[in-house]
Length: 254
Image 1: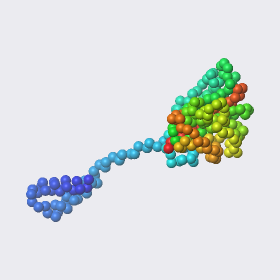
Image 2: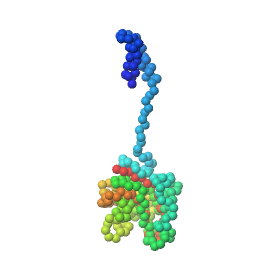
Image 3: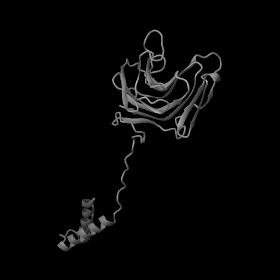
Image 4: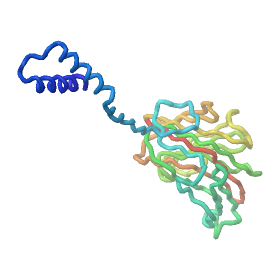
């Protein structure tokens, strides 16, 4: 811009004086005119870079370098979670006060029931970190909550905890009778009784790694099914009543 303005000023000087060689004073005047033009010229607009990274205040120490693709704090129902009464499953659900609340009572189901077994998908991914903060309130022991990955009940693998400090890996790819904890079961003192717990699942190169409240629990090798569904997973035995509450969900993608 500076060189261009100087040449314009010099060109005007030459035009005024014809083909005669400009004097030193003429050149000085042209330089001064150039400086004034630079001071009064309109600056070019600066292009603001577009921020594509999702802003999320949920803290999770696993793979902070991966991209955040899902951030749910239930301040509203922007992700369109199912609400209302569902007599088929005996549930009543609502997003309220920063929580997603699911109230299950087997007495509210229509027809014959053997309890609750429910997967609620919310996103899809292959290699990822998913973290959910939730809790359940029940006087019964036979109920769990957690995360199902790698599909649904045909190929899905779920990691769930109960309100007694136990965890269960249920793998629907294992042939034979399917039951809660058929892949692995155990207990860990990181799982809080009757309090909120944070469950984190890391899926990377056909290895699932499970954490509760930031503590490593176990890992599990699996066969990728080409199904990328990730779901909240709920289970309750027949005759059980339980209230599930979820505070937030975070997903980062590799």
